[in-house]
Length: 345
Image 1 (tube, one colour):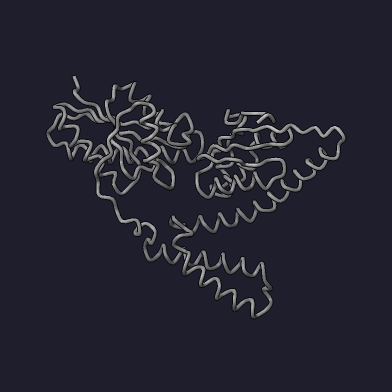
Image 2 (cartoon, one colour):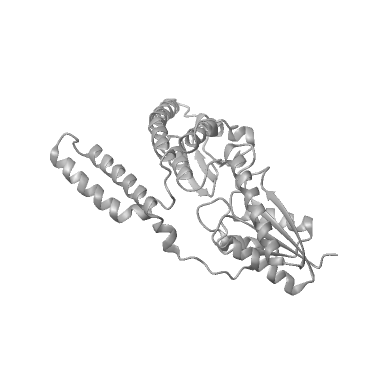
């Protein structure tokens, strides 16, 4: 009979190794026999390219964590169980993660969760504090591992190659934008453009890009974005025509409703691009974005149908992840879209 069972959610952080060690040490202080459940909760399901990649990375992390735990356990009586959670659903925020952990804990009689202070389940920043609040809400005991955290500036500065890539990319982005506003054939604009781009690159590169740039994938994304812009302009023009047609009709058949769409794009820049694209398209307005969950006000039925068909979602996925990532079911087919309120809201 196992005396103590612990659940340890894992993610690729600089403190995950210490967290596993703390779970082993603290668990053995309270019991002679210990069962540690090492889990990785995925923000993507297994049906899309991101999901398949995340599952492979999760299994590698679980394998490493199990070896770490065995090293720390020594001759102690410890059993390790590993699992990947969230493969059949989308986890959009701390509440979803807390619910998944709570269900797993109930199923396996887990008594306590050991949390990594830097826990980041597939997102760009830690969700520890809101996750702790949600764990309190579901009544699941937890313990934050007392680990030594790395200095924050190391992640922002990066290696010399990463710094060069950031400065180089931001310089040309700033220079190109400056020439769009000015005259690329006038020598004065060229000189001042170089000066302005240099200042912007020197002062803002490390905060503009909080992640390493890929020398192959980043240019490809830029090229795909150049393809996306005309498509977005066409969608805006088409939506303008539809809105104008409705407004000019005497009956003015508008149906303002509030909808929910769970978008299958990553948090951060991809989600920002999708939300802004939806808002730029007449007839739809993003009123709130909570992780990948978008609350969108739609004015007319065609705008709502286009939103539920996910054309902009697939286009944004194409920009950031390539052609294969765009081949996914629509939000309507996935059950990720619904009307949550009418014009009375």
